[in-house]
Image (cartoon, rainbow, N blue to C red; front, side):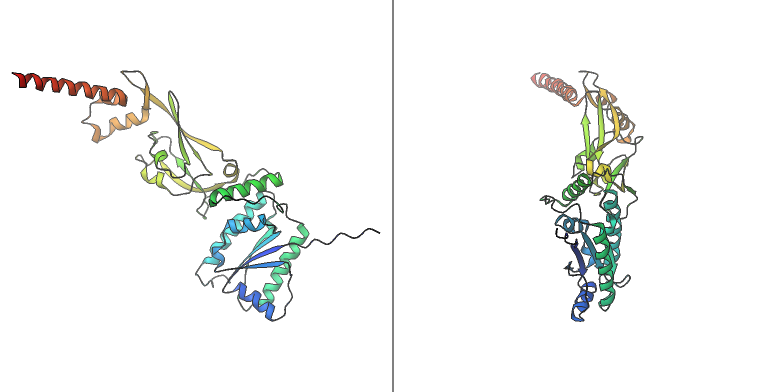
Length: 323
């Protein structure tokens, strides 16, 4: 007679804040209230300190479900830590659902230190809910060893997408959680000067230099919302928007923002700078004292011209001094 397969018992990781939810769990133990022994409690200073990486690492390490437990709403010992955590959890639930990992595997609960029976009820209900879903498909996946938080986050999300074979499509515009964003470039104002490319610390904005054209593009996955490009742009053509495009984030797909035709040097015939940049310089009041002809030649030819003028002046001085 064949043996019956053992019933699936999910592994639940519960991040509990020191002040309330951990106190409720501790009170449940001292009061001898039974709750599932498969709940692994991780004590944290505040639920607001639990970020997406903590949750994803828990899933990566074998958890079938994750709970983030904080103080009662409007009663957080750190003002609004629990509310900020709730926003992160809601966003992460939508991301997991879009990647094919049920949002029911993640939950946020609010209890006070005196609410031991309520804590027991909530974690028991969650454990039963996860038990019905079955084992997490992420069990046994290779641990991500990347230290940089953003790269690790993208790597884990990409791994989830591959395991579940789900093509992500989630897009969250005007995202309050300001970790994801990208530059919105005004084509009418942008002169393809390259200032944003030079100042971007993450390499999110790049400039592809062609023979006759320069192309400005950006990577949504690299933008850290530092807004340095927005601050340095001389034409105020860039605005950083908070947005999450899950497909582009995971696939690291670039987006073309601006294509600028280059100016041809009147002396050597080489292309050297965008037409829009030269036109902008000619229209600036500060450039009125500069000869327009100098703006129509490349830097190399400009140097040669300057050297020629200098040699002529020098030879004139020598002639006068010899008389």
